[in-house]
Image 1 (spheres, rainbow, N blue to C red):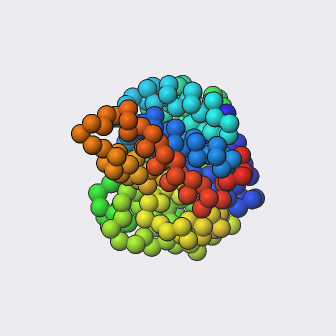
Image 2 (image 1 turned 45 degrees about the horizontal axis):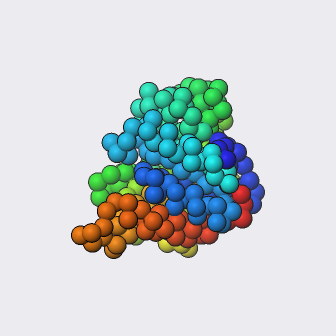
Image 3 (image 1 turned 120 degrees about the vertical axis):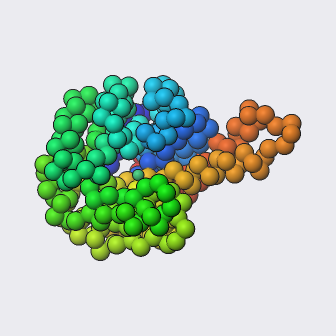
Length: 279
Ligand SMILES: [Zn+2]
């Protein structure tokens, strides 16, 4: 069933688990993620990001994923991740996404706050939840560059932002970076604990691909409610296609292998995040 992000994250802080946002771009990936959530009786979040739009339009992604999410036996939020362009975020709201991230984290704090508050009002009018980001989780380029560009979130800013912006979930920068890591990320769990103690909003961890299962568990224990995963499943899908490809293999023959690989990878993360049995 399709629900919004606020609903899916309601119990996470109190019961100490996190729900995964598994970014997906194909039917096989979407199917594998939903199958994993159903098998483990877990709520789940799916959806594309603005950076993944060259693969398909927002409307095409919405048409496919919204129907699949609505038919699932577990609660599913359809999330538009890292929307930078306000027009696209508003389009996502119109298309029936139940959650949008409006990422103004590169802008000065006050401007981020003002834009987030305006977009939150538009999202809420449509029953859609809104995620924002303060501090900045580095992205693109090499992971070392991204870490260098990371601006750690300050707990006092989280409180001001939570009160002033009316957002439903807050992405925080605690030392992770987007993409594939070449060095081990330096997580600042103390920073996370201070943010979580000061701010009751569900907190979101981006850039988890270089973290160990122990790191994830520590982040959930420290107050993270939502964890974004793309690289693991993206690589697992391509690896499955390569492993099962021969000269006689077509796209159709590869579908079940890709779905199964994404399902297995997703089940692993659902268990690590502790959302199994929480649907
Ligand atoms: Zn992110």
